[in-house]
Figure 1 (spheres, helix red, strand yellow):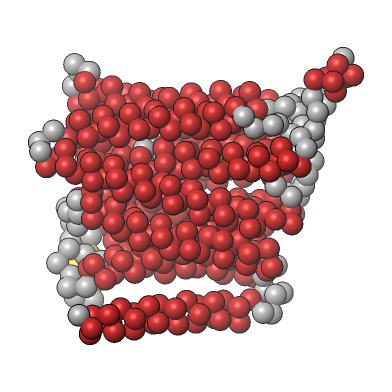
Figure 2 (cartoon, rainbow, N blue to C red):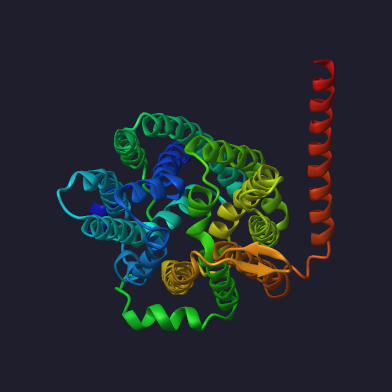
Length: 466
């Protein structure tokens, strides 16, 4: 049996691993496009077309966080497998085909409430399937990428993912606006979901042509109790786990309402929202490679600390952004600039940080445990946020003579919690021992401000010539 398996499976050559890394960019880009088109403003617009309120949108948008709970079960099945590509391909395909099927719901001859229930159930099941295979996808990518180039590769991959997703969402945002202005919004959504199906096929083919790497695995299937006992015995992992809980609470308490706020409170159209998203993506693309190189030099914990801190400042700006403000566009542009800079580092650093704080043996147990528990806590935070919005949706809350609404207060709460998370990383995850970190951060911000000032001066001289 063993020799037969060895004959059937050969370790990929270096050339094949390079091909895997290239295919990983295509896979990630198609996945990010699908994510963009089934979340944020696109999902809010689709749900509102069906008849959802802001609170219902918040509940449904937060369902992927709840779906992470299934990662408890992933290690029990997947950790004993040395080859996981088939289950990854199946899970990813079913997840994205389910999302494509959402477009059928508006055409069903049933009432609005039933349509929203069906949308929520499909959305939840789809993300349960994705969450189940996510730990296997993470370990698969690490098997393709040596530690020495991990920062550069994932930074570059993030840049390509955002560039492709930005182009597609910008085009489809305009298409959706045109159909909406013509009084035929549903056909705009049909075009969007046809595009989702197209990139589902591309995503599947990207996986299909990858050469699988045989991974270390447990010879015996894990027991449910191992999922809880193994991680809690590892002190180093606990530091990471607490950070992940803080991060999920700070993110999820307001995450569902940024897109809702743009559509419902600021009344922005898809084109304006997509332009802001494009600004966000440009800064993301510019910053991603730099964060990758920064992490290779200074570590993932330092990168995570700085980028979460920047995102905390970004969410604080959302708190001060309200309809009628003479500087609303300036604030929104600044928020999207900082968001792009922050997320380009966060997406790469949190993904890789888990490998610094988890052992090689039974790694999926640790990843599944942390994702599931922090996901549950994050979903509770999202439920609290949605409940507060439903209770105080129409209330005006005066603070120091300025009127705010409940969504803005959630943005402020998110901001403060993220800054707390950043301080936690500094004091408890080894960053404090790096005496150069604050100097490095200061120099980085100074260089970015100098670049921005130079850009503005050039633009100013250009206007003078005109």
